[in-house]
Image 1 (tube, rainbow, N blue to C red):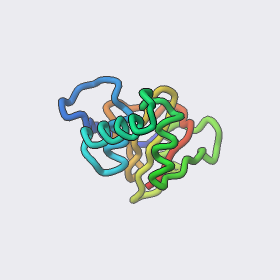
Image 2: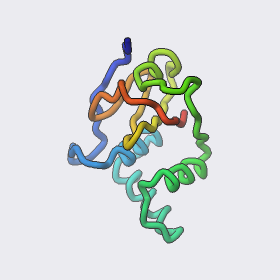
Image 3: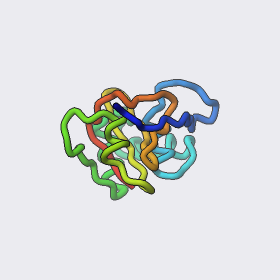
Length: 127
C-alpha cells in the first residue's frame, strides 16, 4: 500500500489544467518559472530546427545537455507511490516519467495537479 503524500502543485501561471505537465515539471525541477521553462525548451528546439519540443527524444537530450542523467527504477513495475515510499531520498527532487505524463517527487512527496501514485515509473532524473 502506497503511503506517499500527494501535494497539489500547479506551476501554470493561469492555474490551468492543460497538457503542460512537461513544462510544469521542468519549471519545478530546474527551479525556474513556468514561462522560463516553456520558452527555454522551445528556443532550444528552435535552435535545432525541431518543432516537437514535448517529445521524449527531445527533452531527454535537453536534460542530458544540462547535466542530468536518466535512470531506471531498481525494480520493474514500480509505481510512483512505491518510488516515493521505498526509493526516493529526503532532500532530493526527482522528475519522474510515467506513461503520457511527467511528475515531480520532492522530499518523497508527489507534487502535481493530480495524484499519479498508482502510475508505473518508466524512468526518472534526480537533482
